Length: 253
Image (tube, rainbow, N blue to C red; front, side, top):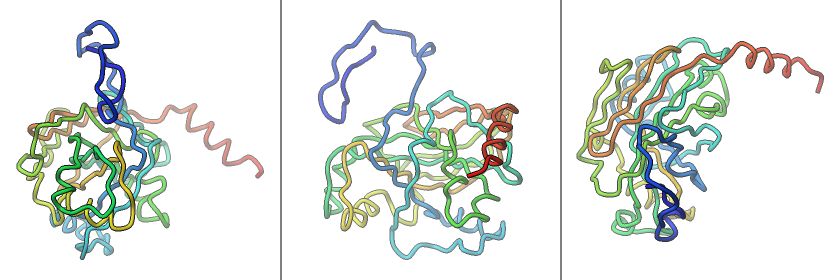
Protein backbone atom coordinates (compact mmCIF):
# COMPACT_ATOMS: atom_id res chain seq x y z
CA UNK A 1 0.00 0.00 0.00
CA UNK A 2 1.56 3.37 -1.00
CA UNK A 3 1.76 5.71 1.99
CA UNK A 4 2.05 9.45 2.24
CA UNK A 5 4.17 11.34 4.77
CA UNK A 6 7.27 10.22 6.59
CA UNK A 7 7.21 7.60 9.36
CA UNK A 8 10.06 9.56 10.94
CA UNK A 9 7.91 12.66 11.35
CA UNK A 10 4.27 11.60 11.51
CA UNK A 11 1.86 8.74 11.02
CA UNK A 12 1.80 7.79 7.31
CA UNK A 13 -1.57 7.71 5.58
CA UNK A 14 -2.77 5.73 2.58
CA UNK A 15 -1.81 7.51 -0.64
CA UNK A 16 -3.06 5.20 -3.37
CA UNK A 17 -4.17 1.74 -4.30
CA UNK A 18 -2.13 -1.33 -3.36
CA UNK A 19 0.42 -2.38 -5.98
CA UNK A 20 2.42 -5.62 -6.31
CA UNK A 21 5.86 -5.29 -4.72
CA UNK A 22 7.42 -6.83 -7.84
CA UNK A 23 6.22 -3.88 -9.94
CA UNK A 24 7.37 -1.17 -7.52
CA UNK A 25 10.57 0.82 -8.05
CA UNK A 26 12.31 0.90 -4.68
CA UNK A 27 14.21 4.09 -4.01
CA UNK A 28 16.62 4.41 -1.07
CA UNK A 29 14.30 4.08 1.94
CA UNK A 30 15.56 7.37 3.40
CA UNK A 31 17.55 10.32 2.04
CA UNK A 32 19.60 11.30 5.07
CA UNK A 33 20.20 14.85 6.26
CA UNK A 34 23.68 13.57 7.17
CA UNK A 35 25.24 10.39 5.79
CA UNK A 36 27.61 8.99 8.42
CA UNK A 37 29.90 6.05 7.69
CA UNK A 38 32.21 3.86 9.74
CA UNK A 39 35.44 2.35 8.46
CA UNK A 40 37.62 -0.53 9.64
CA UNK A 41 35.13 -1.61 12.28
CA UNK A 42 35.82 -5.37 11.96
CA UNK A 43 39.16 -7.08 12.60
CA UNK A 44 38.77 -9.25 9.49
CA UNK A 45 38.46 -6.18 7.27
CA UNK A 46 41.61 -4.71 8.78
CA UNK A 47 43.51 -7.94 8.14
CA UNK A 48 42.22 -8.03 4.56
CA UNK A 49 43.29 -4.43 3.93
CA UNK A 50 46.76 -5.04 5.34
CA UNK A 51 47.13 -8.15 3.17
CA UNK A 52 46.30 -6.01 0.12
CA UNK A 53 49.04 -3.53 1.02
CA UNK A 54 46.96 -0.80 2.67
CA UNK A 55 49.32 0.02 5.54
CA UNK A 56 47.03 2.67 7.02
CA UNK A 57 44.52 0.02 8.08
CA UNK A 58 44.82 -0.06 11.86
CA UNK A 59 42.23 -0.85 14.51
CA UNK A 60 40.46 2.30 15.73
CA UNK A 61 41.14 3.36 19.31
CA UNK A 62 37.71 5.01 19.60
CA UNK A 63 34.55 5.19 17.50
CA UNK A 64 35.08 7.92 14.89
CA UNK A 65 32.68 8.58 12.01
CA UNK A 66 33.34 9.75 8.48
CA UNK A 67 30.91 11.08 5.88
CA UNK A 68 29.58 10.02 2.50
CA UNK A 69 27.67 11.90 -0.20
CA UNK A 70 23.95 11.51 -0.91
CA UNK A 71 24.56 11.59 -4.66
CA UNK A 72 26.08 8.11 -4.32
CA UNK A 73 22.81 6.62 -3.02
CA UNK A 74 20.71 4.36 -5.20
CA UNK A 75 17.95 1.90 -4.45
CA UNK A 76 17.35 -1.83 -4.50
CA UNK A 77 17.35 -3.17 -8.06
CA UNK A 78 19.04 -0.11 -9.57
CA UNK A 79 22.38 -0.55 -11.33
CA UNK A 80 25.78 0.12 -9.85
CA UNK A 81 27.65 1.90 -12.64
CA UNK A 82 31.38 1.20 -12.90
CA UNK A 83 33.07 4.33 -14.31
CA UNK A 84 35.18 3.85 -17.42
CA UNK A 85 38.30 5.10 -15.64
CA UNK A 86 38.22 2.51 -12.84
CA UNK A 87 41.05 -0.02 -12.94
CA UNK A 88 42.00 -2.78 -10.54
CA UNK A 89 39.91 -3.74 -7.52
CA UNK A 90 36.26 -2.71 -7.74
CA UNK A 91 34.71 -4.12 -4.60
CA UNK A 92 31.45 -4.42 -2.68
CA UNK A 93 31.03 -4.45 1.09
CA UNK A 94 27.80 -5.42 2.85
CA UNK A 95 26.93 -3.20 5.81
CA UNK A 96 24.10 -2.89 8.30
CA UNK A 97 22.77 0.66 8.43
CA UNK A 98 21.20 2.37 11.46
CA UNK A 99 18.47 4.93 10.75
CA UNK A 100 18.27 7.58 13.47
CA UNK A 101 14.76 8.32 14.69
CA UNK A 102 15.12 11.28 17.06
CA UNK A 103 17.26 14.34 17.70
CA UNK A 104 20.27 13.51 19.87
CA UNK A 105 22.96 15.56 21.59
CA UNK A 106 25.26 14.09 24.26
CA UNK A 107 23.31 10.83 24.22
CA UNK A 108 23.82 8.12 26.81
CA UNK A 109 24.22 4.53 25.67
CA UNK A 110 20.60 3.79 26.63
CA UNK A 111 19.37 6.87 24.75
CA UNK A 112 21.38 5.79 21.72
CA UNK A 113 19.70 2.39 21.77
CA UNK A 114 16.27 3.99 22.03
CA UNK A 115 17.02 6.47 19.23
CA UNK A 116 17.25 3.95 16.38
CA UNK A 117 14.14 4.06 14.21
CA UNK A 118 15.17 0.93 12.32
CA UNK A 119 17.77 -0.85 10.22
CA UNK A 120 18.46 -1.26 6.54
CA UNK A 121 21.25 -2.61 4.32
CA UNK A 122 24.04 -0.76 2.51
CA UNK A 123 26.51 -1.81 -0.15
CA UNK A 124 29.72 0.21 0.19
CA UNK A 125 31.10 0.04 -3.36
CA UNK A 126 34.74 1.12 -3.57
CA UNK A 127 37.24 1.78 -6.36
CA UNK A 128 40.45 0.86 -4.55
CA UNK A 129 43.01 2.41 -6.91
CA UNK A 130 41.25 5.76 -6.55
CA UNK A 131 40.98 5.23 -2.79
CA UNK A 132 44.74 4.82 -2.47
CA UNK A 133 45.70 7.50 -5.02
CA UNK A 134 43.50 10.39 -3.86
CA UNK A 135 43.91 12.52 -0.74
CA UNK A 136 40.31 11.76 0.24
CA UNK A 137 37.61 9.24 -0.68
CA UNK A 138 35.77 11.80 -2.83
CA UNK A 139 35.43 9.58 -5.92
CA UNK A 140 36.49 6.13 -4.68
CA UNK A 141 33.50 5.95 -2.31
CA UNK A 142 31.20 8.77 -3.45
CA UNK A 143 30.81 8.37 -7.22
CA UNK A 144 27.21 8.17 -8.44
CA UNK A 145 25.54 4.80 -7.63
CA UNK A 146 28.38 3.67 -5.32
CA UNK A 147 26.08 3.45 -2.28
CA UNK A 148 23.05 1.19 -2.84
CA UNK A 149 20.77 1.18 0.21
CA UNK A 150 17.56 -0.72 0.97
CA UNK A 151 15.35 -2.50 0.24
CA UNK A 152 13.40 -1.10 3.22
CA UNK A 153 13.74 -0.18 6.90
CA UNK A 154 13.13 -3.02 9.35
CA UNK A 155 11.98 -1.72 12.75
CA UNK A 156 11.77 -4.99 14.70
CA UNK A 157 15.17 -6.67 14.58
CA UNK A 158 18.37 -6.85 16.63
CA UNK A 159 21.09 -6.52 13.96
CA UNK A 160 23.84 -7.53 16.36
CA UNK A 161 22.69 -11.17 16.36
CA UNK A 162 22.28 -11.48 12.58
CA UNK A 163 24.48 -12.75 9.73
CA UNK A 164 25.62 -10.76 6.70
CA UNK A 165 26.15 -12.68 3.46
CA UNK A 166 27.41 -11.37 0.11
CA UNK A 167 26.65 -13.23 -3.12
CA UNK A 168 27.70 -12.58 -6.70
CA UNK A 169 25.34 -14.10 -9.27
CA UNK A 170 23.94 -16.24 -6.47
CA UNK A 171 27.35 -17.60 -5.40
CA UNK A 172 28.36 -16.87 -1.77
CA UNK A 173 31.54 -14.80 -1.60
CA UNK A 174 31.66 -13.71 2.05
CA UNK A 175 29.69 -14.22 5.26
CA UNK A 176 30.21 -12.84 8.75
CA UNK A 177 28.49 -12.20 12.05
CA UNK A 178 26.94 -8.76 11.68
CA UNK A 179 27.49 -7.93 15.34
CA UNK A 180 31.19 -8.84 15.50
CA UNK A 181 32.15 -5.16 15.44
CA UNK A 182 34.99 -3.42 17.22
CA UNK A 183 32.51 -0.72 18.32
CA UNK A 184 28.76 -1.21 18.09
CA UNK A 185 26.30 1.34 16.59
CA UNK A 186 25.30 2.76 19.96
CA UNK A 187 28.89 3.49 20.93
CA UNK A 188 29.24 5.45 17.67
CA UNK A 189 26.09 7.43 18.43
CA UNK A 190 27.33 8.24 21.94
CA UNK A 191 30.72 9.43 20.69
CA UNK A 192 29.35 11.37 17.72
CA UNK A 193 26.72 13.23 19.72
CA UNK A 194 29.32 14.55 22.14
CA UNK A 195 30.13 17.03 19.36
CA UNK A 196 27.48 16.77 16.63
CA UNK A 197 23.67 16.79 16.83
CA UNK A 198 22.20 13.76 15.09
CA UNK A 199 18.71 14.15 13.65
CA UNK A 200 15.84 11.96 12.43
CA UNK A 201 16.68 10.40 9.08
CA UNK A 202 20.45 10.48 9.55
CA UNK A 203 22.03 7.14 8.65
CA UNK A 204 25.06 5.41 10.13
CA UNK A 205 26.71 2.72 7.96
CA UNK A 206 28.52 0.29 10.23
CA UNK A 207 31.32 -1.20 8.11
CA UNK A 208 31.90 -4.74 6.88
CA UNK A 209 33.97 -7.81 7.68
CA UNK A 210 34.35 -8.94 4.10
CA UNK A 211 34.66 -7.68 0.54
CA UNK A 212 34.18 -9.14 -2.91
CA UNK A 213 35.18 -8.14 -6.42
CA UNK A 214 32.33 -7.13 -8.73
CA UNK A 215 32.29 -6.59 -12.48
CA UNK A 216 29.81 -5.35 -15.10
CA UNK A 217 27.33 -8.06 -16.04
CA UNK A 218 27.16 -9.45 -12.51
CA UNK A 219 24.55 -9.00 -9.79
CA UNK A 220 25.59 -8.43 -6.19
CA UNK A 221 23.24 -9.44 -3.36
CA UNK A 222 23.75 -8.32 0.24
CA UNK A 223 21.61 -10.30 2.68
CA UNK A 224 21.32 -9.54 6.38
CA UNK A 225 19.17 -12.07 8.18
CA UNK A 226 16.16 -10.47 9.80
CA UNK A 227 16.27 -7.48 7.45
CA UNK A 228 16.21 -8.68 3.83
CA UNK A 229 18.23 -8.72 0.63
CA UNK A 230 19.65 -5.70 -1.21
CA UNK A 231 20.27 -6.66 -4.84
CA UNK A 232 21.88 -4.58 -7.59
CA UNK A 233 23.17 -5.36 -11.09
CA UNK A 234 26.55 -3.98 -12.10
CA UNK A 235 26.77 -2.03 -15.36
CA UNK A 236 29.68 -0.49 -17.23
CA UNK A 237 29.56 3.23 -17.86
CA UNK A 238 28.16 3.85 -21.33
CA UNK A 239 30.77 4.86 -23.91
CA UNK A 240 29.05 8.15 -24.74
CA UNK A 241 28.94 9.07 -21.04
CA UNK A 242 32.67 8.40 -20.68
CA UNK A 243 33.51 10.37 -23.85
CA UNK A 244 31.42 13.30 -22.65
CA UNK A 245 33.24 13.30 -19.32
CA UNK A 246 36.64 13.21 -21.03
CA UNK A 247 35.63 16.08 -23.32
CA UNK A 248 34.57 18.10 -20.30
CA UNK A 249 38.00 17.53 -18.69
CA UNK A 250 39.75 18.79 -21.85
CA UNK A 251 37.81 22.05 -22.00
CA UNK A 252 39.76 25.17 -20.92
CA UNK A 253 38.97 26.38 -17.41
